[in-house]
Length: 464
Image (cartoon, rainbow, N blue to C red; front, side):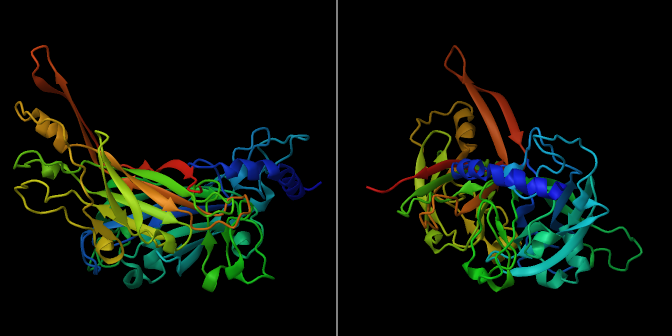
């Protein structure tokens, strides 16, 4: 029996368990190798704050994707069976175990990964390939890729997302190997290695990150597409989560196993999915003076959906502080990639600076700049040396979203999924009361810009 046949035979025998397991999936999984991988947010820009950036600025943003290709995948424990249905394990079977060596023959002497970049409406903008070998590490520097493809003008400041697939998968066949991927968003100084170039900032795509945050990457299975059926009628499934020849030639992808479920396919179409993302410190007015607004930073919230969903054009959200108080607002999340800059509310108190934090250019051009509501804080406000004021001014919280089912055909299998995360800066203050009743600062911790994964609270039936 060939190794490739063993892959298929083992996968076929376990598909029932796969479908049952994925029906209840409700959290993001980012540690497994996939036959395809989704990077839900990617951007390169030569100017952080200019919505129409030129090429001669100093500070920019970039995204770097690191790909690791395992030479083989285990068979006693198959860590990625649910995200690599057609390719794992690579050596042997439960009945005839194999060792780590030899390497997966589909990677010898080499193979290719194909990447596809799509905009917020899931329209194809750019694609390319990367050659890989067993136990290989490859880097996709997005700024460098844009430069080498001659697309700096068109894609400067243009947010989107990447779908990474094997070359066989890109051709519409079963994927033939699996791989890991990680990604980072970098903000910093644009860099170039040739100091003799006349304009050292003109053509570079690189950025030396002064601050950075991880972007979660979601693995997916990638099976053969049905080319006898119009691409626009095909839908991702657990076994084939990527349709390469999708609508208007754009790839259709859905992380049905690794992503957050957005439907319960029982046919009634009334379920609501509840997801929350972490917010950084936001303004809570105390008295008439808010001198500490400069310690409060906006939060970048990234909501990636597997479709452009009209049902999400006006999504109800609740904004919570850290005292279990909340207010209600709304967001427009009808694109496939939705970027929300959740501002501090400088109108709630007498901010001595009178200005909000600058809004990134890509948000001005392609996202939403929102000063969402601030929950009313009815906590008594006796101030002793400013302690209570500081404690409240640095209040954190979260954004809770109520998401209608975008699809429900009653097939009792996963049909839709999303990814959600935020990049907040958080300052955490501990204030304690001593024996005399006086309140004192005891601890202050700062969590720098870092990624907080969205929290999947599950689906809730609205049926009578």
